Length: 118
Image (cartoon, rainbow, N blue to C red; front, side):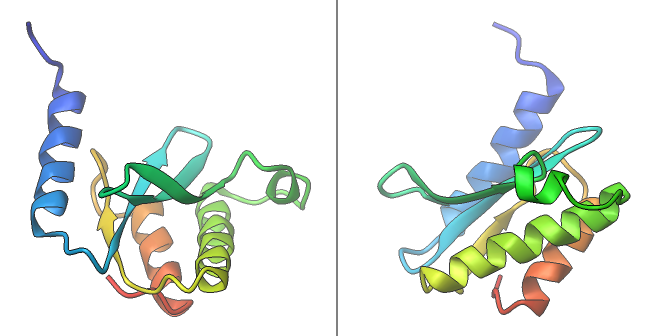
């Protein structure tokens, strides 16, 4: 069975993160499309999603028009706020198949400014 390139990349990056992951940290997985961005904080030991934030949610969409970089900042701030409420500060950043630049980099930097450690 042949696996396409994007699935191989995602598997490779996620496995590297999971290998070095410790029990005191959760994994932050990010998904990006041409218009939207979403992220989840996942507990790999229990295989559950603890928190999620997306640009599709009504309170983010209903605001003024923003470009994609600004939307990723808003989503990151919202996720950081939810994480602080659940007392989650240490995570591993799983960028998936995406390079660490542009919206993904902006997302990560905004999380760091709001108190997340990775």
